[in-house]
Image (cartoon, rainbow, N blue to C red; front, side, top):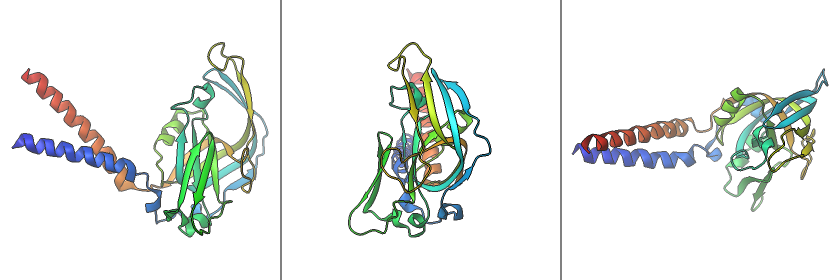
Length: 249
């Protein structure tokens, strides 16, 4: 009897873990909008134009800060390029966040099943069918430039549906490869940030040298916590099964 109950519990934990893997990222379930997300990003002149310099993973970076920048938005899609990129610079440009704000959240248009978002090749895409009052100037694809383990940890805590606050600088980037090996030998690159919200296409993304990441409201806290609980439950039960098997061998 105890064996049957433990198997049922394991199956329940595993099934719940799989289901909540998807439901914790459901931005369409979000209804309570934080007031800052209703407002446009804040872009202010920076008092210092001194370049920001650092090295990371075989690259020497020279950043030109253009503006102080703060964006509060609903996270509807994210893509981690570090997981599959063969290029070393992905270590600091590891993730892009697609964020909505303003009327796109106050009118709940993101809840429409006819509207979808995707990302690929450093671009964010949106498309819809039928007639939707979607404001294309209240969405942005944000290249997050991160040179901090603490901020990397905060970034990993985000899920689609979270309402987030990103602060830092809009920067132009010049990078030089100082490594003598790899696919990027002798390579360098430059990357310019957008400084307006009305542009589209190549060059329309904001490059943010991140100073802080804050979660204003979790999108689906119950699903996220349940997902984590079930994950540890499955791991613990697997360990107990192994210990029992070894002990009976």
